[in-house]
Length: 172
Picture 1 (cartoon, one colour):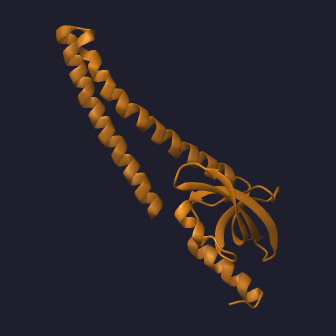
Picture 2 (cartoon, one colour):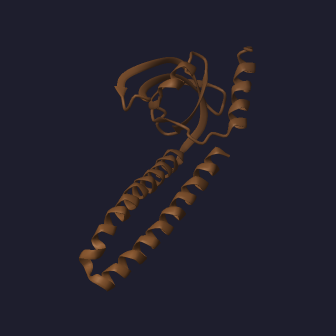
Picture 3 (cartoon, helix red, strand yellow):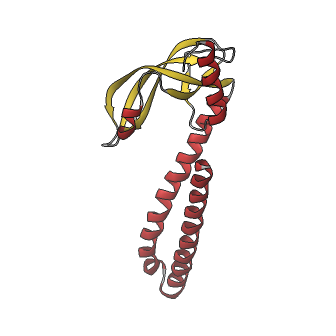
C-alpha cells in the first residue's frame, strides 16, 4: 500500500511539473516570437529548475526498480534474524547511517545460514535493530553470500516463515 502511494505521488509530481513546463514553454515561444530569443532566455532558468530535480527523481526510481528486479532474479525472498548490528562509521547525512547486519537467514526448507548485509538506514531506526529482530532479505540461490534487504516484503509470508522457524525451535 505504501509503495502504491509513492508511485501515485511520483505521478502527481510528474503531471504537475509537466503542466508547469507546458506553461513555461508557451510563454517562451510567445516571447521569442514577439521580441526574439534573448527575450525568452530568462524563462529557461525556471524550466531547468523543474527539469533537473524531476530527472533526478525519475532516475532514482528507475534505478531502485532495476536493482530490486536484479536482486529477485535467481533470488529467494526470506527473512533474517539479527545476530549483531555494527555501525560502519559512514554517515551520508545527519539522518542516514551505514550499518552492517549479521543475520541468521532462514532458508525455504527451514534451515538457516549465517549471512551479512551492509545497508543505509535512518539514524532514528537504529534503535529498532536489536538481536533477534526479523529483517526481510533476498539471497541468491547460487551464492548465499549475496544478500540484500527486501524493500517490498510480503509481510504475511514473512510472519509465517518466522512462526514456522520458532515452532521448529520451540521458541515463543
